[in-house]
Length: 187
Image (cartoon, rainbow, N blue to C red; front, side, top):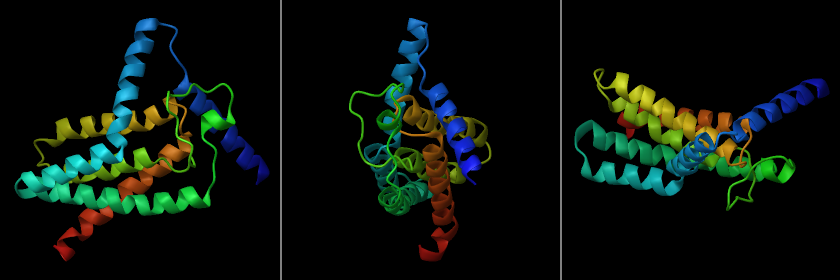
């Protein structure tokens, strides 16, 4: 068992360092840092809750329903995140590893799981479920780009390990699917 844990941690650190690295090309580094430093905020509470609330209030039909589902899923998904952050006091990568690049205002609470990744995946799925088949070829790649970018940004900024991001995406997705599946039973 110790060997398995060591193997996972070693490979997770390698993946983290790959996702956290900076390009030697100044332009690539500037563009990547700009993209990931900006897109990370779409996983924050302000963006996910405000946009879903506004669309829930102002849109019509399935888009209004999707907005309310996003709002509910984002709120509900943070219950297990808060519990897990208290239960697993995991240092953030920049706190545990000396070679990790870190953002300007790093968080200091527990790393596990990623709340931003949880929020963006909880927020994304109702939009995809509300879309008709003609919109899915556009919306699905956009949703994947957004979700993966937020997850990557959390590692790029030195705030989360790959497992933090993966578990956050799983929690957000499962809660979102549960909310959408049970929505008609409650409303």
